[in-house]
Length: 211
Image (cartoon, rainbow, N blue to C red; front, side, top):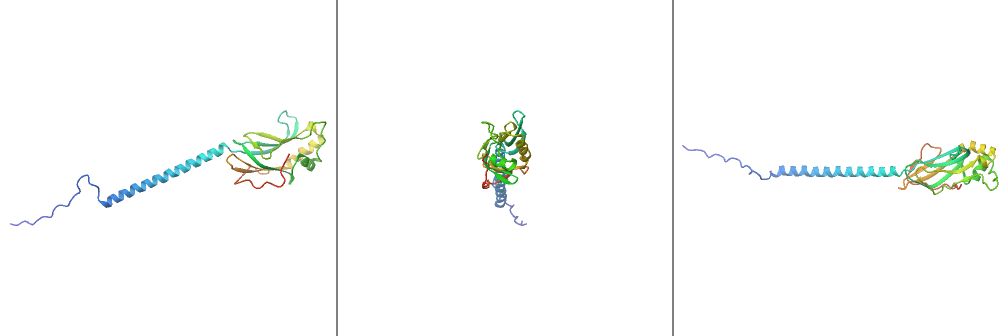
């Protein structure tokens, strides 16, 4: 009786040997893709954190200028016409230029403004000047700083001049460009609700307010 030879059993990889080449290649591909994905996520997180820090820094030094006028003194409540600039922001405002116009015409001085609106500058009473002024061109306004850059107390001028200026102060328009310490800039226009962000201050107008 003869027996047919049997085929040897298939070879198996000894325990602990690396997987076949195709499986090893897929594993390395998954590891590489995961590493790339982690790098992309880390980069995105870093960029997002940096932008958040930049926004927080900008907010901490953000200036916000406001123009206004009044007919009562902030000091004692007495009758007084005042033109004011106020920084309501959280950081200093560096004024680049200021333009003041009455009924569309730029004014350079208080005398020009009173001549246009109210019949001219009233005479001084003795050594008391009728107008109290403060320079604002190229000035730095601190946070919450309030400057009355033109003041006309009733005690220093005739009643008719005071009344005329009180009416015409509503026809005064102020435009100014200012920047933060980070060189972010805004254009203030008293006829608009809020200052408008600009990439840089435009060229200064030909006639600037000197006070």
